[in-house]
Image 1 (cartoon, rainbow over the protein chains, first blue to last red):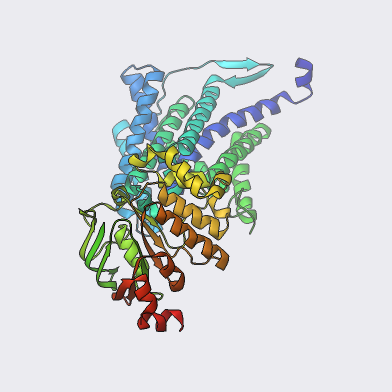
Image 2 (cartoon, rainbow over the protein chains, first blue to last red):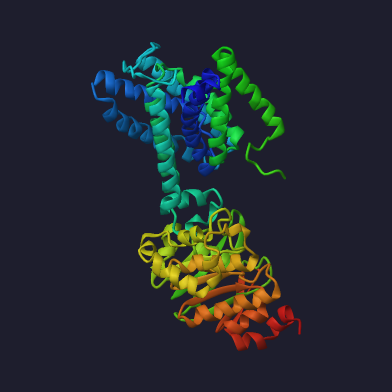
Length: 293
Length: 234
C-alpha cells in the first residue's frame, strides 16, 4: 500500500480528496439554491445569509444553552427551515408575478437586513463552537474529521432529498410544478402550499449546511460572503435549476480550488475557479450539462 | 350532474362567454362544437376552476363549483383533460399518472386506478418509465386521458382530444371516448371535428362567439342547417 501510494505525489492526492470533501458541502449549498430557483423561479440572493443565521443558531444553542452538537443541529435545521418558509410567505409570495428584477432586489434587500440584524444583535466578533474535532492521519495524509463529517452529512442530506423528490406525491408535485404551473390545480395541487414546502425544504438544506460549516469556520455577520458568491457561480455553471448540473459543477469547482491551492496560495485557487467560470460562460453559457442546440 | 346557468367569463377586460346555460346529466356524453375562438376552451377552464366566471353559477351534483377553491374541484369528481394535453414532459408516464392521483382520496386507490388505466391503455404500461415528452402525440393524448382517469372522476372534460393528431389516431381517440363512455363515465367533450364528435355524443351545443346558438340531440345537430352550412361543408 505504502509503496503504491508513493508513486503519486502524496500532497496531490490529499488535495484531491480534500477537494471532493469540499465538493460535497458546496453541492449541498447549490442544491438548496437550485431547488428554489427550479421550482419557484426566484433566486434567493440572501441564501448564504440564511446559512449565516443558522450558524449563529448553532453557536447560541451550543455555547449559550449548552446543548450537545447533535441535539442543536436538528433545532438549527428547523429554525432555518421556518426562516425559509417565512421568507417565501412575507417577501416572495407578494412578488410572485412581479418582474424578476424586483424579486432580485427584494431578496437582495433581505441580504442586507439579515447582515445588519446580525451585526446589531451579535456584534462583529468572530465566534466558534469551541469544538475541536481530531485530524485523521492516513498514509501520510491528513484529513480533518469536521470535513469528513460535513461530506458524509451533506451526502446523506442530498440522498434524503432525492428520495423525497422521487418517491412521494409532494416531491413529484415539486418536480412537476416548474414544467407547467397553470394546470397544477387540475391535479388537485395547491401551488401555494407546494411553494411553501419547497421554501422550507430549501431553508432546511441551508440549515444543514450551516451545521456543517460552523464546524470548520468561525461565524460573523459577513460570513455569507465567503461562500454565497461561489454557490451562485456553481448553480450558474451547472445551469440554474439543473440539480445534476449543480452537483457536478460543485465538485469541479471544489477540485479547482483545492488543487489550485496546492500549487500556490488558497486565494489563487479561487482566482483559478472564477477564471474557469468566466471561460465556461463563453463556452457553455447554458451550463455544463446543457445540450448543444 | 353538472349545471351552468347564465355564465359570463373572460380574461381581464376581454369577455369570452356570454350568458351560457348548459347541462350535463349523469351517464350522458355531451359535445360542445363551434369554431376557433368561440369560447369552448374558456368554457372548460371555467368549469374546472382555472378561470373564474364574472357572473352566473356552476353546480356539480348540487355543490357550488364557483365557491370551491380550484385545487379542490377535482375532488368533486371533475377531471379535465386540457387542450394540447399539457403533460409534464420531463416526468415519466408513471409520474404523470401519479400526479393525476394527487388528492388524498385518489392516493388511497392508486394501485387500483393504475390497473384500470393500464387496462385501457396497454401502451402506457409498456412506456411507464419513459419521459412523457418523448412519446408521440397519440400516446401523449392517451397519457393525458389516463392521468385524468387516475382521480376516479364522475365527469370527464375533454378539450379538443383530436387536435394535432394524424387521422388514424383521431379515429382511435374517438373509439376510446366511446369505450370510456360505455364504462359509465359522464363526458363533456369540446371539439372542432364536428362530424366525428357527433357520432359519439348523445347531445351537443353549438357555441359561437361566446353564446349558445343551438342545442339538440346528435341527430338533430347533424341535420341542422346551421351546423351543416358552417361545419360539415354540405
